[in-house]
View (cartoon, rainbow, N blue to C red):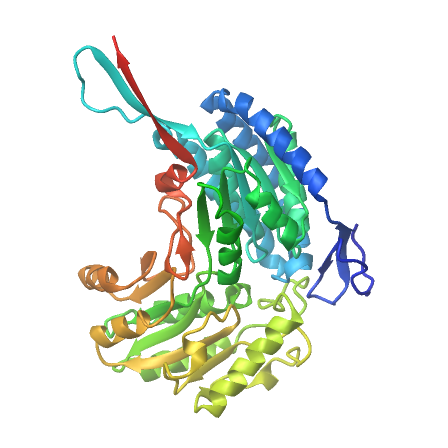
Length: 472
């Protein structure tokens, strides 16, 4: 149900979505038990056999019809996203209209190529090929920060490849799972091929450990990634883990300053900085450092922090008060260690301790001896350091336990490629950031996890090779 009443959680068996807008209980429902998990997996296992025999063309058509349903209801869905996790309503519908639409259409378009048989050179008297067979049942554990996009990354290619999917979404965004189920039902997806469950952490681990689950795709924390590995350790299955990030950007002396500032302010503060690939640390060449910092701070001051349901708001609350308070503590510690804040919090009167509303902050005079420059922030906070060379920037960018994306701002394509080869990361950007291209694979290194989604590579993680060696 949805409501606007304030009350504590009633039971460990109850899911409550507390809206960051006003602290109200926006969604409340009972969690499902292990008997329900058992029935869901039995249904998924049975329905997947028929789904795997369904033509790819029919699977593609169903995916597109589900997309059409989501786009038709994008405004309503967008408002629900805002209530659940706090992103300004002026942006949330675009997660469907722009992001989901682009990804689903691309994945549908490339599916025939990605799932085509691999045929080696001809050999007299034989027919030989490698078929990309579906894995079976895929469990998707999705997060709240981009609740549709992160889920679609795994769900759509898994279904196109002939798998059944069981989705467990974040307790912060449970309505997303509801809307996805409605969309697939409206599209005519056979019953049981896509299901959603509301589960406790313990029961989510029970789901992943079940022998009927053939692959787990998880997006979340490093701690959560370890829990996935522990849950599946007794099975020989694959797991895709998209975990933390501490994404850097380097602005070279030859960069287009105005474009770099605009791109990087947005990359740092969009979605209140709660992006896996949001910019958290900046390295700027000494020749343009002062001009860059001045422009960056000036543009940051133009954000409007407030109620995300109001059209003029460009910066909403963080998802939880605890996350905002942790960010405040990080800022205070960095200042104690010598960092200098450039943003006067009084410019953002909505920003108040003990609430999820927090002003964006830019820190200079920072070093890598300060913990916040090496940690995942997931907040409207960024540190800026001065560097004197590409080599210094590369060393600092690699000084992290994470490696999801890294951005390079330059007018020299060759320099960007040369620097990018040396950065320990999953994606190298030039003159952009905080973007997921469905034509490329989304992946990371170090504590960012393992596996890949999107592109043709993503399909490889949702199928297994099956060789046919036929003597005529």
